[in-house]
Amino acid sequence: MTIEWSYTVHDSLGVLALSGYLGAQAAGRFGGAVGWATARGTGPLVLDLARLNGWSVAGQHAIAAAAVHLTAHGRPLALAAIPADGSLVPDAAQPPVPVHPDLTAALAAYRSPANASGQRQWRTTAWPQDTPRAN
Image 1 (cartoon, rainbow, N blue to C red):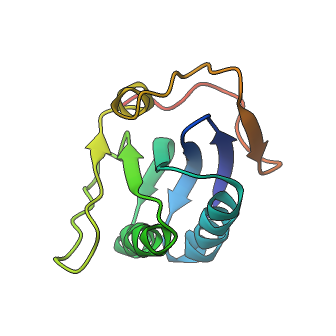
Image 2 (cartoon, one colour):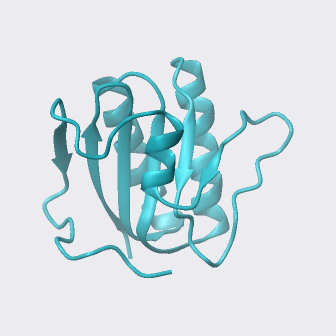
Image 3 (tube, rainbow, N blue to C red):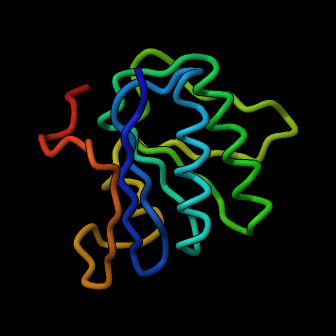
């Protein structure tokens, strides 16, 4: 199983939303999505996990690696709506990764309205069009 992703640029940050399962098989695709987001935005990157069905330890390591990559490019990473089956615990060498209960809270933390007029969005072709999963 792999992931699908959607990336939205807001005025002051980017939101990378994932759906599917973030495991070892999806880590490369996730890394590519993070690279895409890094090249097309500025400011913090919020990783919206509301549609994610779950993640493995390898998926959590991919997120930690993304935090290091983004920090090297001057962009912090924040998480929104982490899966119920775990939490991200970076080691002492990792940059801090704030966790928010949902995307609305993450956007509020960075003062970026959810429906800003200056948005652009990209997504994979199989990105689900239904509502986010319930926690």
